[in-house]
Length: 351
Image (cartoon, rainbow, N blue to C red; front, side, top):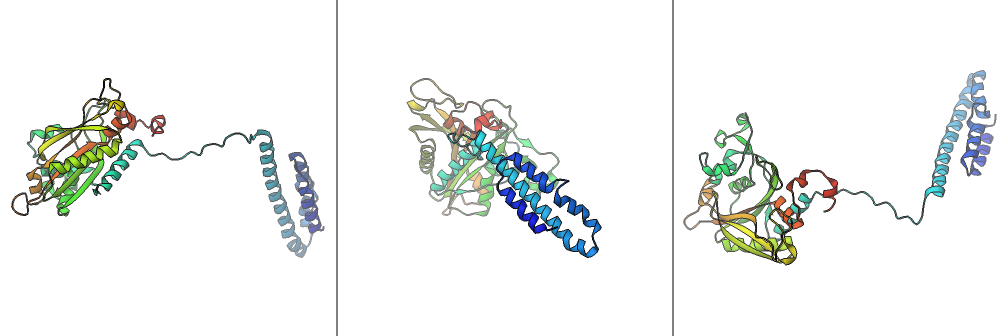
């Protein structure tokens, strides 16, 4: 049998085929059970050993080649048939599905970028914290009533994992302020840092409270740092973040780790009325919204990190903190904090 002649004839016939039906006839003719090639392969058993060694591989190779050509031709004809029958060249193409950042991530990235432009460094710390860093070093000793302000989630039976037993038990950090202590232990002023991160509190979940949420903490320390510096920094931040006319109000407050302590309120212009929960509010101007706690760092906090708070080497600084969810709710008029954690793509894709 002339295998090369058979191959040449099969290829020539395949070139002229333009429809699936003739292709099936071609398959039966050259690859079917009664095809000339199949009969030849079955007859190999009657040949001598030398002839089988010479012709067997060639015949099998030809069969494999024709099968591959048939498969490729079948795919092309199927695609061509689909295009002719179903493809509308005037129809817009399908939009490619792309990944999407969560709105909290977008807001946190924006906060970081604004503070980077104000020459702040971005610092992070552990979410599993010790009592010392979360409370004691921040002027909140064990018997201090201010500890009731933080609904703390303690971790049971974990003291054996703490290297320094004087740091107390383990807990899920209730604020990002512990990172300030950790940073000041290893760095000398002057410096200015921003600390974004997740915090945890044992609270009843509702439209404005969650067990897990995000904060960012700011700290600036130096010899001549004052509340005037703080006022400039936060005013610049809010102007860049909200990108609209805004009023500021600073009023007295109390935090154990700052003295004096203040609260920062904001109010938007007539075109951007926002309620305390992020929804719309009626009236001419928006309501005053409590948005940030701050103050001058308490001398006790500087003592904990061995910074001089008196004498010629005295340093001072301010600290502030705000909730990222709260900023996002106010900026985008989101009425319920639980939407951030609902995994509802209809909500997430809006940002």
